Image 1: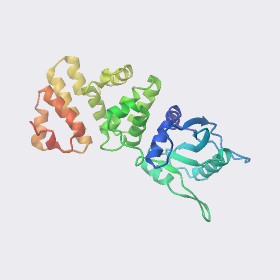
Image 2 (image 1 turned 90 degrees about the vertical axis):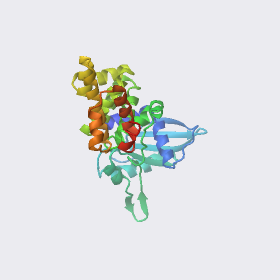
Image 3 (image 1 turned 180 degrees about the horizontal axis):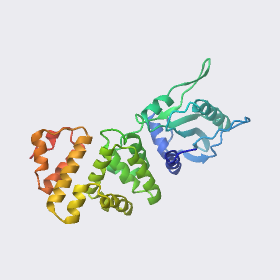
Image 4 (image 1 turned 180 degrees about the vertical axis):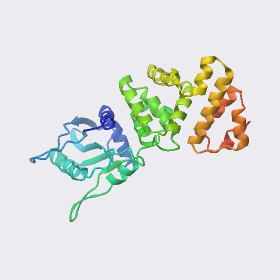
Length: 305
């Protein structure tokens, strides 16, 4: 039975098939910008008792003729049965539409992507190699403007890279992008993104969202991150706001700053840590907090201090 993660990813690509076109172009598979497309029946069984059904079939057309058939599969774990079904998908789709055909496998996990990318040996001189979109092929969406213009790409990027140590801005952009789709889907996407991050990364994300007041940008975000405040997430910031005490806010921002630096693998010297934990200047802490997301070294944070 398909998992909720699997079905959510299928729905994301079904809602915006252009996303796979963008990823394929990065993979040097040409799809013309003016090509039209349609979602077709994913049943790919011919005169055989064996039932084969792909996750999604997208047929592109140029000048009214079928140009490329994309058999799209979401693969979350290693499953050797797919080594039999993928060749069947490819051949049956090629015969049905009499056009160039490729099997494209989206794998958020690196190990699964490596497995899926291996050529499938059918016999002497017969190899079939799926086109795999794993973390190495899915871009890091670090630009907020791009994330808001192309939310599906940002969401896929956050799902693929959320487990990486230096992906804080990618995860935040994915969550912001999720707030731009409808609330029901956005909540599912946000849950899926956060399920793939480490506890430290999740805490850093929540504190960063609160510290930068992202929770006020949409009804979705107010509901999603507002819940985090009431449950005690980002405790220092929440306590400071609730009590109206400047020292509480400063403590929360200092805690968020230290967490973000830890997640990014940047280690403060004892002197630098003392500066952070003993600073009550909220404007300075906020500047450090924003720099912490992009700084390459801790020295960059204190260059003008």
